Image 1: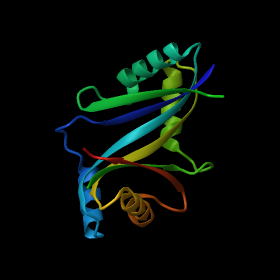
Image 2: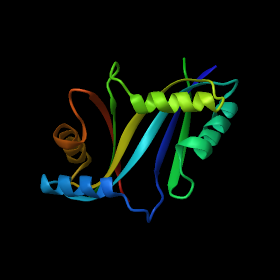
Image 3: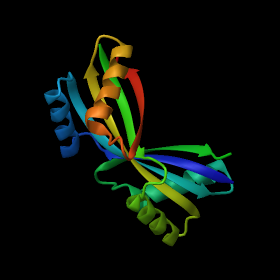
Image 4: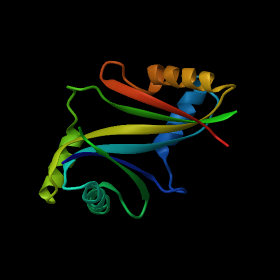
Length: 83
Length: 83
């Protein structure tokens, strides 16, 4: 079975996000009433797995082993079956 | 009213995604049955606006003016009202 994992990796609260701060400043300079911007990254992973549970377990493993830095990142995972 | 915009900016199909290709290769080397990885960026923008429609219109404008490159990027926008 084919699955599409959407893994969003962003900074934990309290960690400095210079790209978000710069984006917020630029948007304010363009006239938008922006309070704050956070920037995160999404990995859309097309994975072969035997079940949805296996796909989710693999996605968690991938985050711990490669995609996220446990010291500074949070992550969320969405698993969708590919038709 | 306060809104949270989630703006996901990714490459249009056919554009080279070296970060996605490298991530796919590394995941395969770790033993995962990965066909492909696409990498995109999410800007979570905390915006003051008078209505949901205004927030969505501003978000589209922000994409055209700053967040996305119309030549190579696609974007999607989700608008949520902040409580």
